[in-house]
Image (cartoon, rainbow over all chains, first blue to last red; front, top):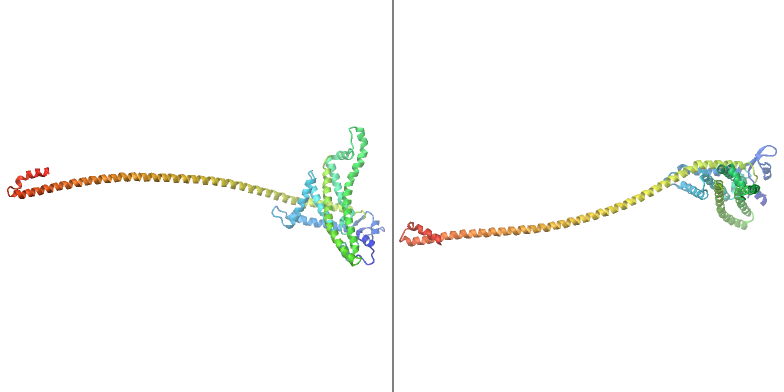
Amino acid sequence: MAGDTLTSSGYIKHHLTNLTFGQHPDGSWGIAHSAAEAKEMGFWAIHVDTMFWSIGLGILFLYFFSKAAKQATAGVPNGLQNFVEWLVDFVDDSVRGSFSGRNALVAPLALTIFVWIFLQNLMDLVPVDVIPELAKLLGIHYMKVVPSTDPNATFGMAIGVFILVLFYSIKIKGVGGFAGELTLQPFSSNNTLVNILFIPVNFVLEFVSLIAKPISLALRLFGNMYAGEMIFILIAIMYNAGLILGLFGGVLQLGWAIFHILIITLQAFIFMTLTIVYLDMAHHEH
Amino acid sequence: MNINLTLIGQLLAFAVFVWFTMKFVWTPIMAALETRKKEIADGLAAAERGQHEQELAKERAKDVLHEAKAQAAEIVAQAQKRAAEIIDESKDTARVEGERIVTAAHAEIEQEANRAREQLREKIGLLAVTGAEKILRKEIGADAHQDIVATLAKEI
C-alpha cells in the first residue's frame, strides 16, 4: 500500500495523478507535488510519466520490429521474424479487408496503432503498486504507468488520425468536394433554393459526425482503460482489509487480469480498425 | 486528468513512430514477404512442371517398352521361322546327299560285281583252259589251240 496514514480515497487519488512537470503559479518550473498543483499548471505542463512510458514502449516496439525487419529474408524465418511477420500479416489482412483505396501510409499506421496501444494497455496488467512503489524508492511521488489511461495520450493519437482523415478528405475530394460532403447531405433536393436551406442543417449533422470520430476514438480507449485501471486499484484496496478480503481480492485481481487481456487486445484492435475505416471513408466519394 | 502539453507530445511521438514504422519496419518486411511468396509460387510451379514431365516420361517409357516387346516378339518369330526353314533345308540336303551316296554305292557295287564277274570269268576260262591244257597236253599243245581257248573264254 502507498502509506500507513493514507485513506482509500487518498490512495485512489494518488494512483490517478500523473507526474506533472510545469510552471508553478509563482513562476518557477518543477514537478507538481499534488493533484491540485498539477491542475494549476494549466495547459503548459507535461505528464512526464505518460510521455516516458508511451515513448519507452514505442521505442521497444520499434526496436524489436525494425530488428526483425532488418533480418527479414525470403528464406525460412526465425522466431522473432516469425512473430513480427504474423502481426504484419494480420494487420495487412485487416487493412485489405477494410481499406479499398491505395495508400502506402495506412497499413504501417495501423500496425503502429495496434502494437503501440496494445503495449500501453499491457502496462495495466502490471500490479498497480509495483512500479509506483519502485518509483517512490527513487524519490518520484507520482507514477501512472498506463499511458492509455491518460486522455492526453489517447487524444494525441486520435487527433493524429483525425488530421490524416482531414488531409486525405481534402486531398482526394478537393476542398469543394469535402465541403459538399459536409453540407449537401444527408438532406438534398432537386430545387436549388431548398438545397441552400438544407445547408445549415446538413452541416450541423455532418460536422457532429465528423467531430465524433476522433472524440469517440479517444474516449473509447481512455474510458475502457481508465475503468479497468480503477477496478485494479479498488481490488488493491481490499488487500488492506484483512486476510480473508485480501485473499478474495487476490482471486478477483487474477480474474480481472485474465479478462483484461481480452479487453486490452480488443481495444487496440478496435482503435486500429476504426482508424482504417475512417481513412477508407476519407478516400471515398459519397 | 488534465489536458495539457502531453497531448502535443503524444501527437508528435505518434507521428514519428508511424513514420519510423513505415520506413524501417513495414517496407522491408513486406518486401521480404512478397519475395518469399513469389519464391514459393515459383517452387510450386516448378514442382508441378517436374511432375508433369515425369508423367510424360513415364508415358514415353511405356511406349518404348511396348515397342521393344513387340520388336522382340517379331525377332523371335522370325528366328523360329528361319530355324524351321534351316531344318527343312538341311533335311532336303540330307535326303539328296543320301540318295546320291546310295546311288554312288549302287554304282560301285555294280562295278565291283562286274569286275568280280570279269575276273571270275577270266579265272574260269583260265581254269578251263588249264583243265583243257591238262587234258589236251596229252594230245595237243596249248599253244596250238590258244585261239580256241580265247573264243571259249568269251562265250562263258
